[in-house]
Image 1 (cartoon, rainbow, N blue to C red):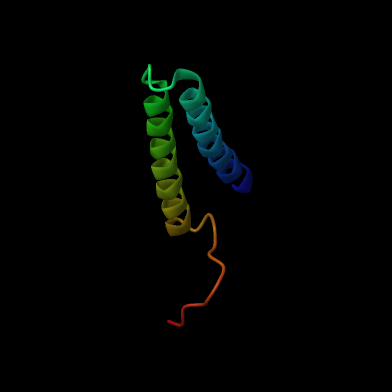
Image 2: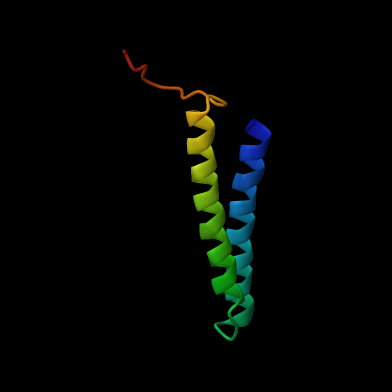
Length: 69
């Protein structure tokens, strides 16, 4: 589970880095930076939804303050 989360996070960072490269290379001449940032937002939303699902199904445990029930 940890490996999958790390891979998804690295994909988000890679998409952000590619958007920076496209920004420096194209100087606004193409839509490649916009698409890279769109991918970054989509991957980030997917990662958050996956974390919520994994926590809800008990695949991962939260660490921090314990909830008293």
